[in-house]
Image (cartoon, rainbow, N blue to C red):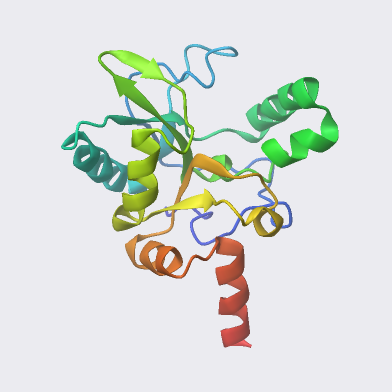
Length: 199
């Protein structure tokens, strides 16, 4: 069965139901899911099985250039996202937390088609994900070739509803990823254009 969230834009206006769980989740590797380690060290990063070949293709291309990109945080359940958001509230306060973390049901991580990346160098995990990191620079330049987009780009905060996140990527397919990247469009902007053309 196809992941029902594939064609769905997920954001603050378009939510997933609390019981939505992709039925094809797979572990991306056996590394500890460092994002979740403070809550549950047994969890491994997961994504939809349908996009794993695309991620693996991208990962191998990066590796040829001496860069080992891994998934830091993939699928998150509705309940887990609530815990993530609650922690951000404790750290930043409610209003600021809304810019840095999604409320449950509003997170793309629940789709299985979105993930945060990190790097793995010389047997060690690195969570530094600033936009001048060589892995992030490579991702932003090349991810569209494998069907992924930078989901929350700089300068589009008012459109996406979230702060710039150079580490957060979403699978949309190679054709759409190329179009969005070349035209500097977010999914929100594309959906508005798509709606106008179909009216």
